[in-house]
Image (cartoon, rainbow, N blue to C red; front, side, top):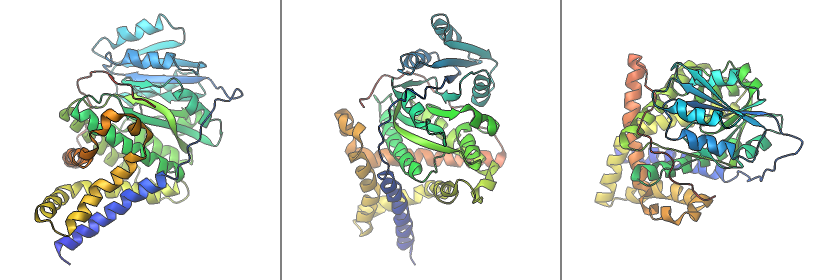
Length: 397
């Protein structure tokens, strides 16, 4: 077996994995949800904020303007050194259901836990302080939780700052990523609860011991704990949250390093879940193995890129296969996405999708190498930090 055959087999497997995610995702049934007059629990919105003065105001205003009114907003100022505190006070003085908790800097997990422990809601919704939710987002999440067998719901996250190349890259990446949530919904295997918009029953959070801070991916860790206890999480495609992505390459690399390092830390810390069979079956035997294979994908990326370039330059028989691997899965997905079809401004980037994802993969490779180094040396990763510009674009539905 020569190198071309080995790489072709690897590419074929990667293609199958990609197409599997897309096809299962298309089985997701769009269920229009309506707020029940009989189910209107008190909701606590916890907004952790560390140096978020740029976007905090827009975040709070989007919550206040929500059509779901039976709620409180708890802003947890995690030792900010900018004027986050002043921005938050402006809302606490004008709205009786908005509260501010000041604390020394201790990380996002500690901020979330403090907010939850001081909350009065039956349902906890976490929203990042650089995000903007649609007026009906909370209602859609609460509607899904009317089913008492469901303990959590996540919304669809869309990148809002898309006026530069980095923003466009992240927009398409998130588009694909949240399509995969549909396939996870089908198989009851949702993992990674986005901090930008997640709703959980408070008693479910308490039952698994709140958020933990051994890694910077507390959302992944708590999802594993919840699945380990048999809690069901659902995906609500109509609950839309606009978030601010990284604004430059350095910020994007730092973010992905945190994600990859945190993922590896969680896998090592929760390794028993990789072999358990009683709860979260599809997550254990389908999603997490695919996620681990994704790590291998990233590690092999330089070899794959070299093979692609060689195939195209030599016009070898493998070139057609490589191009189909790069273009067809993403094209099929994006052609079916209603948000993209309504946003003609972004369609001009359609032909660049393979290049955009190649750039992301290159960044992911560097981030993974840095993360593996941190695992070996037991060094921690600092929280993502980049120059905040705020959300400047509200996409159509």
